[in-house]
Image (spheres, rainbow, N blue to C red):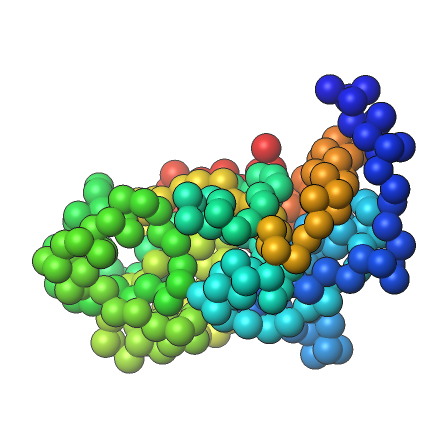
Length: 263
Protein backbone atom coordinates (compact mmCIF):
# COMPACT_ATOMS: atom_id res chain seq x y z
CA UNK A 1 0.00 0.00 0.00
CA UNK A 2 2.79 2.42 0.96
CA UNK A 3 4.71 1.49 -2.19
CA UNK A 4 1.66 2.19 -4.37
CA UNK A 5 1.20 5.58 -2.75
CA UNK A 6 4.84 6.47 -3.33
CA UNK A 7 4.59 5.46 -6.99
CA UNK A 8 1.48 7.59 -7.49
CA UNK A 9 3.17 10.57 -5.87
CA UNK A 10 5.74 10.53 -8.66
CA UNK A 11 3.25 9.74 -11.43
CA UNK A 12 0.86 12.60 -10.58
CA UNK A 13 2.44 16.05 -11.03
CA UNK A 14 2.27 18.26 -7.96
CA UNK A 15 0.31 21.42 -8.62
CA UNK A 16 1.68 24.91 -8.10
CA UNK A 17 -0.14 27.50 -5.99
CA UNK A 18 -1.03 29.38 -9.14
CA UNK A 19 -2.68 26.25 -10.56
CA UNK A 20 -4.47 25.18 -7.39
CA UNK A 21 -6.69 27.67 -5.58
CA UNK A 22 -9.40 25.85 -3.62
CA UNK A 23 -12.57 27.73 -2.66
CA UNK A 24 -13.48 26.54 0.85
CA UNK A 25 -16.88 27.19 2.41
CA UNK A 26 -16.59 28.06 6.12
CA UNK A 27 -18.75 29.43 8.92
CA UNK A 28 -18.22 30.67 12.47
CA UNK A 29 -18.06 27.41 14.42
CA UNK A 30 -15.59 27.89 17.26
CA UNK A 31 -13.16 26.20 17.87
CA UNK A 32 -13.38 24.38 14.54
CA UNK A 33 -13.40 27.56 12.45
CA UNK A 34 -13.59 31.25 13.34
CA UNK A 35 -12.57 34.58 11.89
CA UNK A 36 -9.77 36.08 13.98
CA UNK A 37 -9.58 39.82 14.65
CA UNK A 38 -6.59 39.85 12.30
CA UNK A 39 -8.96 38.98 9.46
CA UNK A 40 -7.63 35.44 9.05
CA UNK A 41 -9.62 32.25 9.53
CA UNK A 42 -8.35 30.05 12.36
CA UNK A 43 -9.39 26.92 14.23
CA UNK A 44 -9.05 23.15 14.16
CA UNK A 45 -10.87 22.63 10.85
CA UNK A 46 -8.86 25.41 9.23
CA UNK A 47 -5.56 23.89 10.31
CA UNK A 48 -6.65 20.41 9.21
CA UNK A 49 -7.71 21.72 5.79
CA UNK A 50 -4.48 23.62 5.31
CA UNK A 51 -2.43 20.58 6.36
CA UNK A 52 -4.18 18.57 3.65
CA UNK A 53 -4.02 21.21 0.90
CA UNK A 54 -0.39 21.94 1.68
CA UNK A 55 0.58 18.38 0.71
CA UNK A 56 -0.06 19.23 -2.96
CA UNK A 57 0.81 22.94 -2.77
CA UNK A 58 -2.81 24.08 -2.99
CA UNK A 59 -3.96 27.20 -1.19
CA UNK A 60 -7.43 27.80 0.35
CA UNK A 61 -9.70 30.68 -0.59
CA UNK A 62 -12.17 30.94 2.30
CA UNK A 63 -15.72 32.15 1.77
CA UNK A 64 -18.22 32.57 4.63
CA UNK A 65 -21.46 30.76 3.95
CA UNK A 66 -24.16 28.94 5.99
CA UNK A 67 -23.85 25.15 5.90
CA UNK A 68 -27.15 24.43 4.13
CA UNK A 69 -26.35 26.91 1.35
CA UNK A 70 -22.79 25.63 1.13
CA UNK A 71 -23.93 22.04 0.56
CA UNK A 72 -26.14 23.22 -2.31
CA UNK A 73 -23.28 25.19 -3.89
CA UNK A 74 -20.97 22.18 -3.56
CA UNK A 75 -23.34 20.04 -5.57
CA UNK A 76 -23.31 22.72 -8.31
CA UNK A 77 -19.55 23.21 -8.25
CA UNK A 78 -19.74 26.83 -7.07
CA UNK A 79 -17.47 26.08 -4.12
CA UNK A 80 -14.80 23.37 -4.07
CA UNK A 81 -14.39 22.15 -0.50
CA UNK A 82 -16.25 21.79 2.81
CA UNK A 83 -15.04 20.54 6.19
CA UNK A 84 -16.61 18.20 8.75
CA UNK A 85 -19.12 16.70 6.31
CA UNK A 86 -21.11 13.54 7.03
CA UNK A 87 -21.50 11.08 4.16
CA UNK A 88 -25.04 10.55 2.86
CA UNK A 89 -26.23 8.81 -0.29
CA UNK A 90 -27.46 12.10 -1.73
CA UNK A 91 -24.17 13.88 -1.09
CA UNK A 92 -22.16 11.07 -2.68
CA UNK A 93 -23.80 11.91 -6.00
CA UNK A 94 -22.01 15.25 -6.20
CA UNK A 95 -19.11 15.08 -3.74
CA UNK A 96 -15.83 13.26 -3.22
CA UNK A 97 -15.04 12.36 0.39
CA UNK A 98 -11.53 12.10 1.81
CA UNK A 99 -10.85 11.00 5.34
CA UNK A 100 -12.14 10.51 7.87
CA UNK A 101 -11.24 13.96 9.16
CA UNK A 102 -12.32 13.21 12.74
CA UNK A 103 -15.01 11.63 14.88
CA UNK A 104 -18.01 13.86 15.60
CA UNK A 105 -20.45 13.45 18.49
CA UNK A 106 -23.77 15.27 18.84
CA UNK A 107 -24.85 16.03 22.40
CA UNK A 108 -27.47 18.06 24.26
CA UNK A 109 -26.58 21.38 25.89
CA UNK A 110 -28.88 22.18 28.85
CA UNK A 111 -29.10 24.53 31.81
CA UNK A 112 -26.70 23.53 34.59
CA UNK A 113 -29.59 23.08 37.04
CA UNK A 114 -31.50 20.70 34.77
CA UNK A 115 -31.70 17.04 35.75
CA UNK A 116 -33.05 15.27 32.69
CA UNK A 117 -33.00 11.49 32.39
CA UNK A 118 -32.29 10.53 28.77
CA UNK A 119 -31.46 7.08 27.47
CA UNK A 120 -32.84 7.29 23.90
CA UNK A 121 -33.66 9.86 21.21
CA UNK A 122 -37.37 9.46 21.97
CA UNK A 123 -36.74 10.72 25.51
CA UNK A 124 -35.99 14.17 24.03
CA UNK A 125 -39.74 14.63 23.56
CA UNK A 126 -40.49 13.97 27.23
CA UNK A 127 -38.48 16.80 28.78
CA UNK A 128 -41.24 19.38 28.95
CA UNK A 129 -40.00 21.95 26.42
CA UNK A 130 -38.53 22.76 23.02
CA UNK A 131 -35.04 21.90 21.82
CA UNK A 132 -33.30 23.99 19.16
CA UNK A 133 -31.47 22.51 16.19
CA UNK A 134 -29.49 24.17 13.41
CA UNK A 135 -30.83 24.49 9.88
CA UNK A 136 -28.93 22.22 7.49
CA UNK A 137 -27.13 20.26 10.24
CA UNK A 138 -27.07 16.46 10.22
CA UNK A 139 -27.84 14.78 13.56
CA UNK A 140 -27.85 11.20 12.33
CA UNK A 141 -30.17 9.11 10.17
CA UNK A 142 -32.42 8.03 13.04
CA UNK A 143 -32.99 11.62 14.17
CA UNK A 144 -33.56 12.84 10.59
CA UNK A 145 -36.15 10.17 9.83
CA UNK A 146 -38.08 10.94 12.99
CA UNK A 147 -37.91 14.67 12.34
CA UNK A 148 -39.26 14.27 8.80
CA UNK A 149 -41.87 11.57 9.36
CA UNK A 150 -43.13 11.79 12.95
CA UNK A 151 -45.09 14.98 13.79
CA UNK A 152 -45.28 13.95 17.46
CA UNK A 153 -41.47 14.00 17.47
CA UNK A 154 -40.74 17.07 15.30
CA UNK A 155 -43.19 19.15 17.38
CA UNK A 156 -40.54 19.42 20.11
CA UNK A 157 -37.80 20.94 17.94
CA UNK A 158 -37.33 24.49 16.69
CA UNK A 159 -34.97 25.21 13.79
CA UNK A 160 -32.59 28.19 14.04
CA UNK A 161 -29.83 29.65 11.89
CA UNK A 162 -26.85 29.16 14.20
CA UNK A 163 -25.24 28.93 17.61
CA UNK A 164 -26.07 32.49 18.65
CA UNK A 165 -29.77 31.74 18.29
CA UNK A 166 -29.42 28.47 20.21
CA UNK A 167 -27.80 29.97 23.29
CA UNK A 168 -30.05 33.04 23.23
CA UNK A 169 -33.22 30.93 23.28
CA UNK A 170 -31.88 28.78 26.13
CA UNK A 171 -30.82 31.77 28.24
CA UNK A 172 -34.22 33.40 27.69
CA UNK A 173 -35.95 30.22 28.84
CA UNK A 174 -37.71 29.67 25.52
CA UNK A 175 -36.02 26.31 25.01
CA UNK A 176 -34.77 23.69 27.45
CA UNK A 177 -31.71 22.79 25.42
CA UNK A 178 -30.03 22.55 22.02
CA UNK A 179 -28.17 19.96 19.98
CA UNK A 180 -24.52 20.68 19.28
CA UNK A 181 -21.25 19.04 18.31
CA UNK A 182 -19.45 17.96 21.49
CA UNK A 183 -16.10 19.71 21.08
CA UNK A 184 -17.64 22.95 19.88
CA UNK A 185 -19.90 23.02 22.93
CA UNK A 186 -17.11 22.03 25.32
CA UNK A 187 -14.98 24.97 24.20
CA UNK A 188 -17.94 27.37 24.26
CA UNK A 189 -18.68 26.46 27.88
CA UNK A 190 -15.03 26.94 28.84
CA UNK A 191 -14.56 30.28 27.08
CA UNK A 192 -17.78 32.20 26.34
CA UNK A 193 -19.64 33.98 29.20
CA UNK A 194 -23.07 33.39 27.63
CA UNK A 195 -22.50 29.64 28.09
CA UNK A 196 -21.55 29.90 31.78
CA UNK A 197 -24.79 28.24 32.95
CA UNK A 198 -24.72 25.46 30.34
CA UNK A 199 -23.68 21.86 30.88
CA UNK A 200 -23.40 18.84 28.58
CA UNK A 201 -25.82 15.99 29.12
CA UNK A 202 -23.93 12.65 29.08
CA UNK A 203 -26.29 11.03 26.57
CA UNK A 204 -24.79 11.05 23.06
CA UNK A 205 -27.44 11.74 20.40
CA UNK A 206 -25.33 10.60 17.48
CA UNK A 207 -21.72 9.86 16.66
CA UNK A 208 -20.12 9.39 13.27
CA UNK A 209 -17.02 10.04 11.24
CA UNK A 210 -16.89 13.28 9.25
CA UNK A 211 -14.83 13.96 6.15
CA UNK A 212 -13.20 16.54 3.91
CA UNK A 213 -15.67 16.95 1.02
CA UNK A 214 -14.87 18.15 -2.51
CA UNK A 215 -17.19 19.04 -5.37
CA UNK A 216 -17.18 16.55 -8.24
CA UNK A 217 -18.09 19.39 -10.62
CA UNK A 218 -15.19 21.69 -9.80
CA UNK A 219 -12.40 19.38 -8.61
CA UNK A 220 -10.69 17.48 -11.41
CA UNK A 221 -10.13 13.72 -10.92
CA UNK A 222 -6.33 14.09 -10.93
CA UNK A 223 -6.52 16.75 -8.20
CA UNK A 224 -8.83 14.51 -6.17
CA UNK A 225 -6.39 11.61 -6.49
CA UNK A 226 -3.50 13.85 -5.44
CA UNK A 227 -5.50 14.95 -2.40
CA UNK A 228 -6.18 11.33 -1.43
CA UNK A 229 -2.47 10.63 -1.57
CA UNK A 230 -1.77 13.82 0.36
CA UNK A 231 -4.22 12.76 3.05
CA UNK A 232 -2.38 9.47 3.58
CA UNK A 233 0.95 11.31 3.76
CA UNK A 234 -0.33 13.80 6.35
CA UNK A 235 -1.99 11.05 8.38
CA UNK A 236 1.14 8.89 8.39
CA UNK A 237 3.32 11.84 9.44
CA UNK A 238 1.05 12.60 12.41
CA UNK A 239 0.15 16.10 11.18
CA UNK A 240 -3.60 15.64 11.68
CA UNK A 241 -3.32 14.04 15.10
CA UNK A 242 -1.04 16.83 16.33
CA UNK A 243 -3.62 19.46 15.33
CA UNK A 244 -6.57 17.60 16.88
CA UNK A 245 -4.72 17.02 20.16
CA UNK A 246 -3.86 20.72 20.30
CA UNK A 247 -7.57 21.63 20.32
CA UNK A 248 -8.58 18.87 22.73
CA UNK A 249 -6.83 20.41 25.73
CA UNK A 250 -9.81 22.25 27.22
CA UNK A 251 -11.09 20.21 30.18
CA UNK A 252 -14.85 20.26 30.71
CA UNK A 253 -15.84 17.17 32.72
CA UNK A 254 -18.45 14.97 31.06
CA UNK A 255 -19.65 11.53 31.94
CA UNK A 256 -18.99 9.08 29.12
CA UNK A 257 -16.86 11.53 27.09
CA UNK A 258 -16.87 10.56 23.39
CA UNK A 259 -13.56 10.23 21.58
CA UNK A 260 -12.44 12.90 19.12
CA UNK A 261 -9.06 11.36 18.34
CA UNK A 262 -8.19 10.97 14.70
CA UNK A 263 -8.42 7.38 13.49
